[in-house]
Length: 253
Image (cartoon, rainbow, N blue to C red; front, side):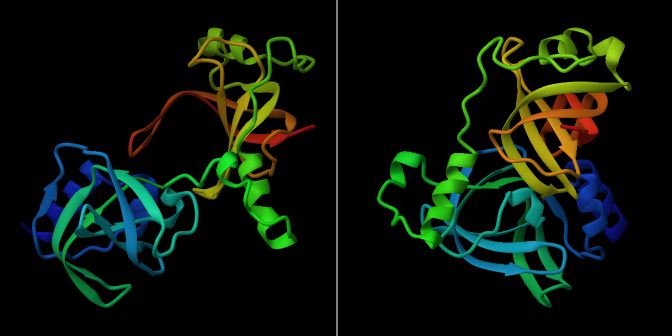
């Protein structure tokens, strides 16, 4: 298969816009699509970080595999001994990484991947209560936030609540929307943005939370008032689809 065909196939099957900028061309061997997206949980044996990709040798049930992805997809730093969940991907044979100056017999390029979750709070009770170790407990607590009850959070003046945003989405799409809600989760510096998951006690699952992208910072548990542009049916690729998302948001209060 010619190099240009390989590039086209990669674009169609794997790459998000972020990966397009990072693609290493001129590969000589065919690309094999992984037709079934089996869910894998594997331990990292070796991690090599290039300028664009991170290359991981992982082991699952005694079998070792090389995979590559963008660091931002992992949701955090990883090292040998850590575990990752992944699925899908595109396999390439005889792939030479210019970043590492290394040729892989087989390597799987992955976009659906994340670092395995840290232990829950009840697994952290034994952690020493010193300044160094307490930071890990705090990070876990910051991401374990109770959703607000109905009526707990007052709607912002001239704003909308989450239930209204979903019910009026057709009318509001492309327009600026003001929302006050609690931050349930923060994912920092993904695609150069901070991603917030917000709830305000209104709406019916799954339409009771809203994803917001912003350059501002927030802490899980904060009640914030955000203003951003509502977009609908946003497909970021790699299985990430948002029925609604509030983009280019700023935290105004």
